[in-house]
Length: 162
Image (cartoon, rainbow, N blue to C red):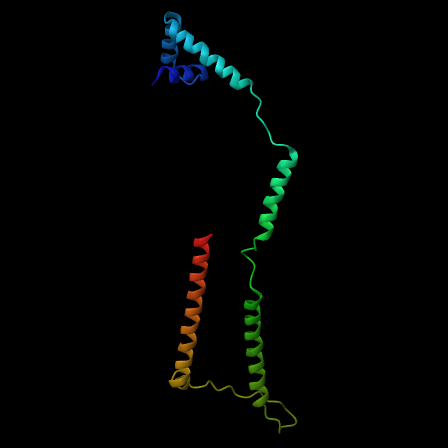
């Protein structure tokens, strides 16, 4: 540790008791050490007497307004795309419409006194999971995965450029 570092620790009060006593002894005995101490003490007083410059209120206001404007330009990340809501709503509307159509087609309209709900027959799963239906379902899934992978890569590319 250099002499200046020891003196700065002494001036700041950051040295141990033993170091403090050793520096006191050196200040009494060594004239060059005392001279360096007085120089650093004068510099410390000058630094403490300086006023910290502050920017004007107008400058601070303009900077804060620019920051607020930048945050206002950025879209919210929690905002939900309206197309997603429309797709989900359309799915439910089509499902309800198909169920209502199924019920209306299977009602026995010739019985005028009572309305009997049709017996619901489950379609055979083998016919749904064979051939063209399965190929169409897999094609749709592949296209959807490719679309989502493309969106992921685009977001990654935008984040890399920003």
